[in-house]
Amino acid sequence: MMKDPVEQLLFALPDAMRASACKAADRVRSASKAVIASHIDADGISAAAIAGTTLARMEIDCQTMFFKKLDDAAVQSLRDADCDLVWFTDLGSGSLSKIYDLDAVITDHHAPDLRGSRARESPQSLLSDFATVVHVNPHLHGISGASDLSGAGATFLTAVATDHANADLSPLAILGSVGDLQNRKTRRLEGLNRPILRVATDLELVEAFEDIRYFGRETRPVFKMLEYSSDPFLPRIGGHEQEAISFLLGLGIELKDGESWRTWTMLSGGEKKTVIDALREHLIACRRNKATIERLVGETYSLTGERPGSPVRDMKEFATLLNACGRHGRAEIGMRICAGDRGIALAKGLSLLRDHRSALSNALELAKSRGITRMKHIQYFDAGDDIEETIVGTVAGMLLGSGGVDRTAPMIAFAESLEPGEVRMVKVSSRGTQDLISKGMDLSAAMRHVAEGVGGVGGGHNIAAGATIPFERKRDFLLLLDEVIGSQIMG
Ligand code: C5P
Ligand code: C5P
Ligand code: ZN
Image (cartoon, rainbow, N blue to C red; front, side, top):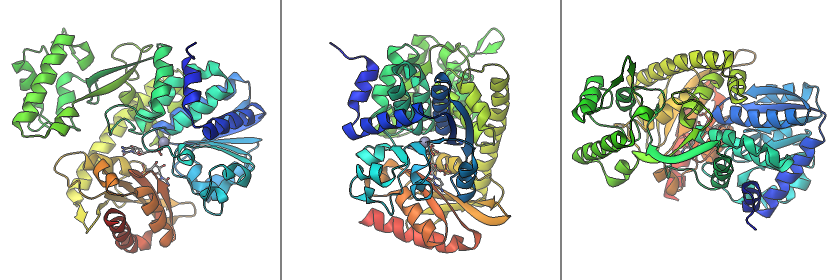
């Protein structure tokens, strides 16, 4: 007999990973008072919402704390918390050596810090090494945490291992993966994200279908969607409102329906096809290569229960809303939206989203006007204290994808960061490309190693990583990073 999608998902896990998820589930079940510790971005918020709902359904008392990173102050606040379990979601793995003695479950996808542990030789030994910590992380089983499972995904595995009835939380796992851009490389979700998606589509909570990949399918007027195009950038139309309008009118597309602007999802199937075909022709005429043109269309994900035109129907838009909350200090608002609040929390989230958009566009302009400096193997910009440290990584990623920027070197970005006690530090963000990864680049390893070499901390994923370093060591950091990235790529 065909297994149900949750069983198929658990069956798709390596045995040791399934065992860890079940062990984590046992720990969660036996808690009487828990603290969820999560990361402030879309994936972290989705993950916290999954953990929070799982605990609430078991009537386990719980409190959520969000962190930009797990520094010593964060770890101390968790040590001081009145609870018998800390459930780390979308963070923790990069800081194992700081938290190994806590009563904790970690459901994360960041590259683990396995120093001082026999786990380097065998992930199995991690269980005995860190006896008080149960660790669910794809990296321990040879699975990519950059593309095949998000923090929300790892948390979802534990939620369904606790009770199959938590299958209805699968849309939040997809939301986390989309928020972390895990569908960027192949234009669809891959790896363990696929059996999770299957759970969500089987329950008819999520619809996955081929469509245009641009941001704003549900909420932006079509001409605005094209005007703000990136990946692929539309020459002449991108950045030019009038050109975008003329392009659509030239195809016979009505821009308005009565008084309101038509969005992409309001177009008929025939109209969508007309526009996509014409965009393909446009890109061919602009001599874009096949791989670039293919990026117009990909798998998109919608929440079937949300009304058409809602800012939380398309997963890409929903994830941006969550980032707007978390990256501006209001992650708990995002968590309430994830839990279903479509009233006060959604209204507050939308107002944060407006601010987030203008912060990003100002930051992008600022970075461009400051200029990008090219070294041998890396390029960087320094935002000083003009860009918030929580969005400087997003800006670096946007720059790298914005056309006209060199894509043969990773983008490094600096922003000032005031640590507890008024200590002046620098936040570093880095973003790479698939091409560079296939040449051997690993930003997570490079950022961790170089940050530690100058008295800081760092980590993340091969394609996107971060660090915090002492202010006066910026120059040393750059020189060393240039060398390390060079040796990764050449080696
Ligand atoms: O902390 P967390 O794992 O949730 O964040 C992952 C980060 O990596 C996100 O900021 C995401 O935008 C970035 N990323 C990227 N390109 C990819 C995959 C992830 O910039 N292809
Ligand atoms: O902050 P930013 O978006 O640039 O972070 C990129 C990735 O690096 C995220 O997945 C983040 O969690 C991770 N990171 C980390 N350790 C740090 C800083 C960032 O693991 N000290
Ligand atoms: Zn994540």
